[in-house]
Amino acid sequence: MEFLITGALNGNGKRLKGLLEVSGADISISLGPMNLTEPLILKRTWFYIHGREKNFEILSRSDGIDIMSRIFKYKGIFFSGISGIYHPQTWKFTRKEWAKRYGGKFPERDAGFIFAEDIAALFATFQRLKLERVNIFVSNLKPGNQIFEEIVKTIRPEYCLFPSSTFKKYKKDGTKFVGLEEASSFNGKYIIHYQEKE
Image (cartoon, rainbow, N blue to C red; front, side, top):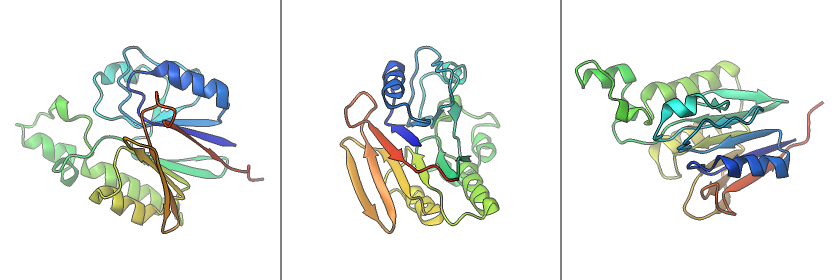
């Protein structure tokens, strides 16, 4: 059983199709931004975490699943993520609270940011499932970021994948960290192998 994780697609849907054809991975997850110019239809189950997208409407017409801040299970493997990018203020507020700052209307330009309820939803699901740890966690956050560090400390992922200008791989406190370049790069992909559980 294989999980294929790619760096930001940035409009390169053909790259993901090619990687899936070659790898034959069971599950694929792509980091954002996706920045698609047309809907990406793969006719299979695939996941992504959005960034600050140029067009959310096109992305919504693709057949991928936005992880958002959920935890999924596939053949005994728990994988999760948090969509959006870091903003020094938005993560302290809910979207409703943020909208009040703008006369009650949520500003469209802020749709790609992480808000307080995103973090709370991830933690609540983790606690409800009574997991010791998740197997895979993906996000657009990076090591050193306060939200990133709090999430890793709480859900203790086996693998943690994030965007990076250069490929990185290291282990710390029982977690394997992998920094991925954009999907178009040779170092923009990573495959995780698991033995299927009976």
